[in-house]
Amino acid sequence: MAVLTVRNLPDEVHRALKVRAAQHGRSTEAEVRAILESVVKPPERVQLGTLLFEMGRRAELTDEDVAVFDAVRDRTPAEPISFE
Image 1 (tube, rainbow, N blue to C red):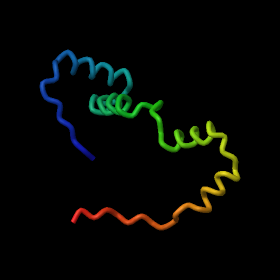
Image 2: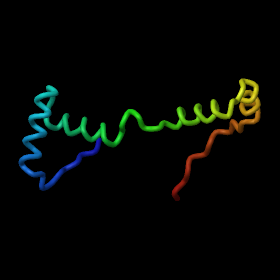
Image 3: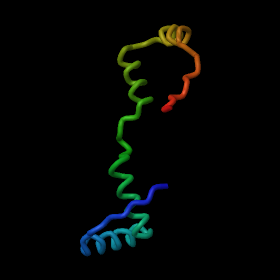
Image 4: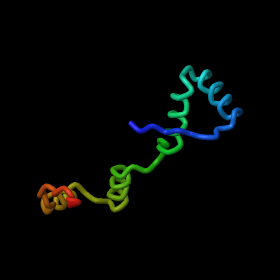
């Protein structure tokens, strides 16, 4: 796991974090993790699988259409990228 150091955090912000953490029954560090996660990974973010499903639904694809795609799909395993 990564470690993050925040420098020059104003005292009033640190106090507010401690109060908020106490209200949620967790440590200040856990509170900061929860805040960061909620901001950068909101639950309403678009996920690729959901987006693809919605596109197929809007295109009104039938089970037969999907079967055709599945039949012609390349099943060769992908080769990992070499950086050498």
